[in-house]
Length: 279
Ligand SMILES: NC(=O)c1ccc[n+]([C@@H]2O[C@H](COP(=O)([O-])OP(=O)(O)OC[C@H]3O[C@@H](n4cnc5c(N)ncnc54)[C@H](O)[C@@H]3O)[C@@H](O)[C@H]2O)c1
Image: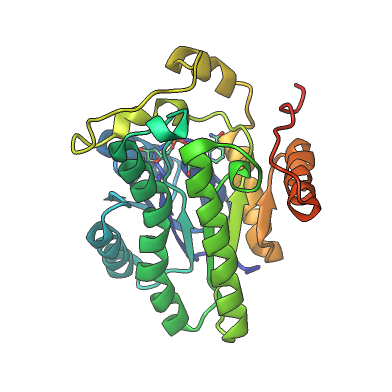
């Protein structure tokens, strides 16, 4: 999808972090952007900041774990702009829990609802519209490098599922001769607010499981400051859509870990962890 000028993009989890970085990059590429997020005040502040800079943007409060919210997001987009060309299924949360068997059912329901079902809801609500339009269109699912390598507990399980789902949809689109294309974004560390995901945990999931030993919001905040800037990730996504690149990796230093897993699988070895990349 080379010509982005005036095209309509929808981003979930757009109020903060990578979603906001994508919104900024899309606006700079001349696109009209629908920002959606469950965190209402931050969503409106981010949208206002972009609008003040001259962008054509629209905000829709959406909980991606609720199918009818995502269906309403699609309706609101079509009402506002009459078309949709790009969907970024980006909203995501981190729920610590280690060891895995001590994760609560509330932890599982929350993280699966946002990280996996959010993507499913986006694909179900938007892909039929994109196919029907018959124009160039692109979906970007935010997974993580954690979805390509060993480890990652609940979070890794949801992100592996997003990679698998994205690969399947790619094959279905290409095999069926459909116009839309899809990418899966697999970043390493990015300087966002994901360490504080509990801020958006719904009251209906009160039972919080254990976090890995030594983990704290404060320590995580410091660690995430060392990550890539969200805007750099947004620019990489623009490039990937123009190049029709499926796997979008932003942190080449993790490539060895991805290869390590594949080598262990085909070699019949049991999983082991490599140390994280230096730096
Ligand atoms: N930060 C990283 O290092 C990193 C690395 C790999 C992948 N990711 C993925 O990037 C995506 C964006 O996260 P981020 O790092 O920018 O974190 P972030 O917390 O800064 O942004 C996530 C946004 O999603 C929103 N959100 C949470 N629950 C939601 C829901 N139910 N419905 C709609 N919106 C919801 C939050 O309000 C927030 O604005 C996530 O899918 C995350 O798993 C992040």
